[in-house]
Length: 177
Image 1: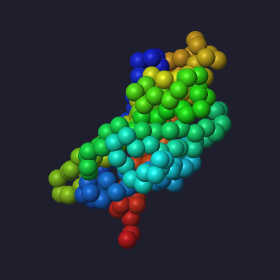
Image 2: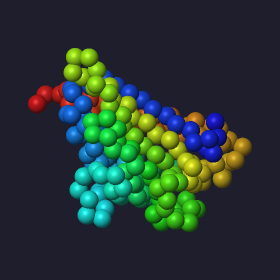
Image 3: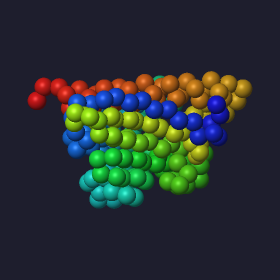
């Protein structure tokens, strides 16, 4: 699996709540910072206060190998109680791309919600890395002969972090009131 292929990873869980309740949490851009070890905070930009197509938010991230960096994300899909997706860019050209372009993101993330029998929700979290350069590109630059291992390792990290986010959402929704 090579970076240029736009590799993806995903995980899912069933949540004992209707999509409307789960939607409130997946569209709260600050929530993953409470649940994931990599995203430290997220804040809306340009006066936005809630998701809307084209709305932007800034994320502050940290990773043991890459240090700290910020991103600008653009909401690229928003279907009430069904899908929330955002394209991630590097506003400071940290990874070697000349300017942020949501049509050529360093990653695309999404939540998909599907109603389940009995009033629950199947919640899926997925990510696609590339095509723009990212921290993964920097690691590949240092060890090009290990590209497939680097990509596979990063996808596993992302999947683990997404799993933590989903379990956190599930606990918040299903936990004591």
